Length: 163
Image (cartoon, rainbow, N blue to C red; front, side):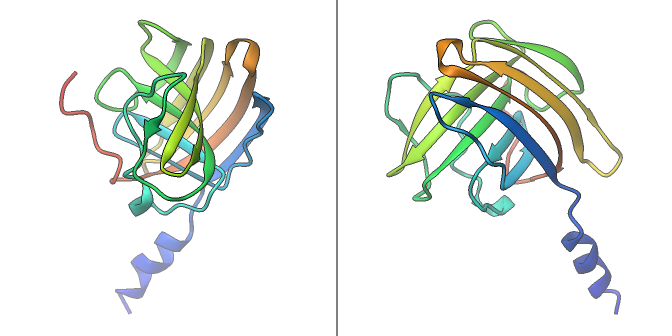
């Protein structure tokens, strides 16, 4: 009976994400979202925590960014300059920023990346290691995204080994 209790708790996810706006005509309908290490990831495909090894620390615009997944999807990824996600309100810029944001279009194991040029990300981490936050990001002339989220921690998104 005791083994059933953790399984019931694990199944009761408190994940809730809303995203509005578009980037280069692409909207993001949030299906999966996780945080861990220096990353927050919101995707329009069904992922479990174990499916997250495709997440990279940074991407190049106007380049074929190889990713370790065969799934076709769009995602919004925030990556902190520090080794892990931090509480508070931070500004997003394309250079010398405490946190960076990318909108990703992934197909054929390649990510096309749009880097946010400005914005904010604000969040709190609760005692159950859920992140509650909101964001506003602009991708230059390509568009903007705004949203709110409550997401679960994913131990498969590892801390950065350096700072």
